[in-house]
Length: 405
Image (cartoon, rainbow, N blue to C red; front, side, top):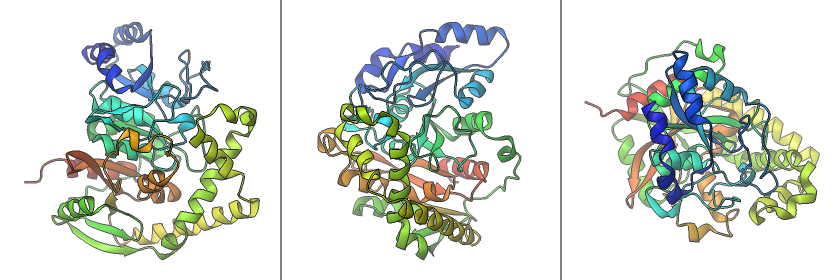
């Protein structure tokens, strides 16, 4: 009960960062009821595009501002059955269509490490709530890095699971063939705990290899990540303690940055065509991304889907020679809020998504671990695992996060 009450008493701390935008007024009652049944309760915050019965789910948008779902998302049902208490909904970039969490009807979420900087997005509220200690764990969603980017910039752990390993029923979609519900937490123990609650049973039954970090072979996907000079220096300093090799994924290098946008923008535009008469009420960057989806032809979208399958086969083949792929999660630490306002869909979007869209496209599990720091700000290490071997990735990340003796 103490953890739940600590979260509910964090209102003043939350005001500084604007992470939780709607508090659950029934959270304390729900916690006491769950306690009376013998459940071990814990607080959790939930991104504002995951449906919560009786608690508004706004998608950070004026268009959905008064939407109160009559059902819980499947992940919320599972969490409640296991003692999870939803203390509040977290800020998101509008429609989950952005990577800064500055374009929201509730205003920007601020980075707890430096209030003048962005938290990242679109699950910025969830990452900031965890980084500030308001909750130990939160749910987010990840289509083009929206769990891992804010986790990197806020210095917390963020898991994008294998595609489909966590049920997405009740997640308001963006681009359905790329959407993942993910977990953001203060440590890997919380990632593992919540993953085991909400993941598909067949995923949890898979045999987990115990991989010693000292013996693991890490792959560096040449041409599929970018980094500032400072981040690259810290990245290779980190790698110097491990066995690693370069991995060349030629098909992905040639096609990733054309295939991914064709799928992501086409599907997102299709998702929100039903509110096209209200696109003018959206933040300008979000509206521009929806309009971009109108530019793709059906043949281009279908060709992109075929190339996605080919890139995925290339990935599966490459993973037979390494245990994991590894990159910096983001090429840079969190920029200033004033530097991105009004330009959220410009260069900053290309920079912050450059290292994270590859595992999204191939549906592989990827976790951001807060192991780097530059200029006093955190940057994550992204570990990418074999498809549907999520627990193996989580276990390895847990070992990697502990000091090596």
